[in-house]
Every structure is written in C-alpha cells, then in structure tokens.
Image 1 (spheres, rainbow, N blue to C red):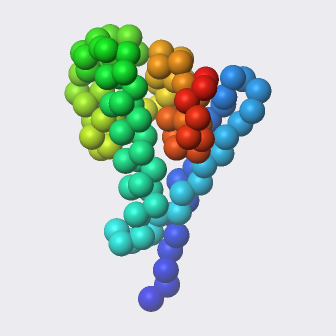
Image 2 (cartoon, rainbow, N blue to C red):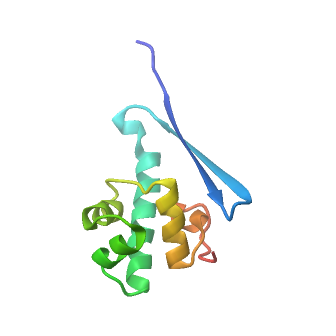
Length: 109
C-alpha cells in the first residue's frame, strides 16, 4: 500500500516584513502528534494571554470580531485562528505571532 503525505502549509506575515512559513506533515492519526503539539501550544498561549490581560472569552470574541464559541475552540485546540485573527490576537496581547505559534519563547511583539 502506498503511503500518502499531506502537507498543510501556513504563510504568516509578521510586521509586514518577514514571512514565517510553517509546514506540517500530516499522515495517519498516529503521525499527527507534531501538529497536535503545535495546536496545543497555540491554544495554551491564547488562553494564557487572554487571562493575563484580564478579559473573558466573550470580551476577546468582541475584540477580534468572532463568537464566544470560536474563542473557546481556539483555547481548546479544536480550531486554529485565521491569518488575520492571529495578527489581531498578537496585537491585542502585545506579543509576536512567533510567540503565539510557539516558534519563539520570547513574548516581545
């Protein structure tokens, strides 16, 4: 049986100058751990930063133009923010997109 790899790529612009490209190889369920770790890190960082600035999921939803369920899904790791929403979140939290994505441990935005 031939194995097929599926590549999911995201191109994210940071500060309109540099481009971060993240390609995650997704195969069978047992090989999706790498993607799960990235999503888990992103969801944890969104929740941590929301709590750090002292707002509710509802308030965050209003600020980024989404619904409470969407924010809840981001924080549970069942949904990923779009490119535009990721930029909004980074700006609101005053952190870099690299930090939110787990590429950089430094929160400086």
